Amino acid sequence: MQYNALDMNKRCRTSLVLCVLLLSACIPANETNGPATPTSTPSGEIQTATLTESSQAADQILYIWLAPAFDPDNGSQAGELLQERLADFANRNPGVEIEVRIKAESGAGGLYQSLAAASITAPSVLPDIIALNPVALQRAASEELIVPLEQYLEAPSSPAWYDHTISISRVEGTMFGQPFASDTIILAYRTFLFQTSPLTWSEILAGPDSFLFPANDPQAKFTLAQYLALGGSLVDESGNPQIDPIVLTEILSFYSSAKSSNILSTAALQYSSATETWQALGSERATSAAAPLSEFLVESDLRTYSAVPVPTQSEPGTGLAKTWSWAIVNNDPDQQELAAELIDWLTQPEFLGPWTHALGMLPPTTLALSQWPEGPETSLASSLVTIVQPDITAEMFEIVGTAIHHAVIAVIRDGVKPSNAAVDAAQSITSIETE
Figure 1 (cartoon, helix red, strand yellow):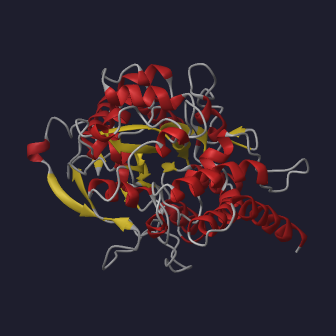
Figure 2 (cartoon, one colour):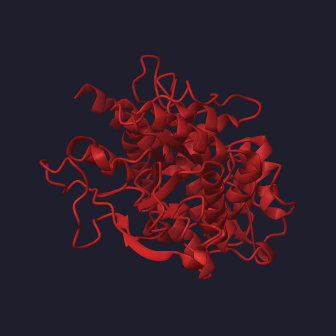
């Protein structure tokens, strides 16, 4: 999708053109001078409509790669807000055109994968700006696929920016990303079935059955959030991955008690994502369930459902935040400066507040949250922004998350004693280090 200074005023005279950018790992190595004309949509890329004035030549074009959740042409309120904001920027900068391409969040042809592939095989098709999740941002920065931002943008800092966004913007002390929205897992529940909000483990155990969380999530995000909230450490004094078996035992004991009370069943092992358990709640297969914040706020009927942070031993609960950030790819100083101006434009609170509200995601700044309307969505967001923690690294998900996942399965499916499962998880990490 392209945006230039005339787009918003001349939509009736524009021509609809389908454009596809050839970019994926399957680009031939000798194809470096620009995109070829594809015969089909590359894996991981979504065709998007391009509104363009055929007679209008742009002086400067900014290319942006986005995940489907942020597609300005998806017909949602959030999409319309982004369309208008991009068009406003083009109107303020005559001769500037903005073209948006949609890529899958991950996997073959996804944002990071396409970025890495094109940097080698087709650098001419690289974007100027890309939206990356924390794992992708860290990888892209470590491989020098994106550029430092500090010479163009002020680094996020407290108290204007929420703590969970500050650390995620930096890789090895250098600012590579400008955070703009965060998603997290919450606990959704059927309001009329609970006398009080299930903010703690004891309140879940005292509530109606059944409680669901994605027990078969290979990264164990729901359990990891509780582990970190209880002070569990991911690394030892030498910086090696570790699991504190005492802390993990507490969480596994809660799961064991919930199973013994018929609050939690082995059916939880059928689910590997919070999206799946949220759908189960909607199908009345549970009374409370883990759910992505964005899906809950956008899809739920707030007269029927309520939500709280992921419960733990005591209030106020917890959560892991997956924070999306803008990053700059282009190495040309002129393009970098214009790209930074657009990123700054997209993170101003008067836009970022309404946009994150429409996305159902947490805004990164206090001023952006102040733009949310009063209501239960804002109350929930306000309870989350000060307690969520940033996503851990991909390596930690792979090592620690996998070990915790196996411990959860051992307790729920096999009836292993929580303390034994926790010790086994801790020792499995130690064995990895000694291999």
